[in-house]
Image (cartoon, rainbow over all chains, first blue to last red):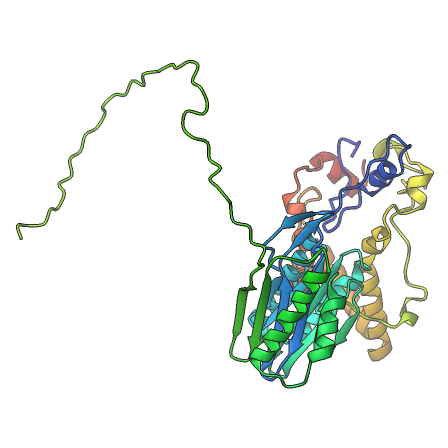
Length: 280
Length: 142
């Protein structure tokens, strides 16, 4: 602020002070045009399937920033509650923060009421939050969980739209993943079938989409508990170092050498007897 | 949870405040205290969410009160607004951050976490207003 004092206290929440400056910077003269830095997107394939005893969620592990892979082992399946997990696609920071806040809100609710949260609660909170910001928060989420009413799988879009279906895929790799899911999904599958289906769907997304890649994470949620398998399938393109790349000692020539003596004064001396074993 | 009120509740209740130049005591721009104003800055919001975020709590309250009035009659929002007014007066000195605990409890936001609690928390702000100027402004003697 240009003034040396403020007359009203600061308002908490989002701060729009710099948006005018940003617009001016982006629309500057031809030489003065500065591009805004692009946020790190997850460029993802995420999928979820409801099976006989619960829900299986799957995700790839690549995070991209423009054309560079920013994170090869990104964790896209976020913890929401002991019985609810959420896969996030879209802007990495947005999905991270939104799921964190959702998790905090549900924890407060659990402590207040002494009950495990239901999946519909998580979905409602997300809808409110995302619609309030009119899609500016780029979070495409797949929520899955098991509660007292059964197993549920929801998708929440960045504008707050929801869809409740037995199998889902989201992210930039969702078209190939949906192809696999549409072809092989049946109701009431058992665990191994469901895991294989989700894993193959993510694999199709990884093969056909540049933004997805590396390993596949799976998360199996049942009434008894959660099994977070990270990684379920590792990428075959796991490059191991071919040779040792450390420098040999003596690579850098020593030009001069100075030795500074550190004068130490003996202040205190203690002797502690060590307990040695007696004669055997 | 945010109110998902009917569109009809909003018909005449939402003032668009905040972007118009803050009028001083004589209805003119207070250049001494707020600096120069430019038409471009005052007319249009630079970010699509700026206006809606500024008035969000206000609009939610108005929708809630309207719905309550329609369901229970005029007495219900009147009593509640009296409590809100009382709670809003429990503040610390103008330059110190107040917890607004009573107001939060009334609104029901004391057990939810939103972006207002994480970002730009006034308790953690690095600048503080000048105590004398702020108190004088609050009391109207400046």
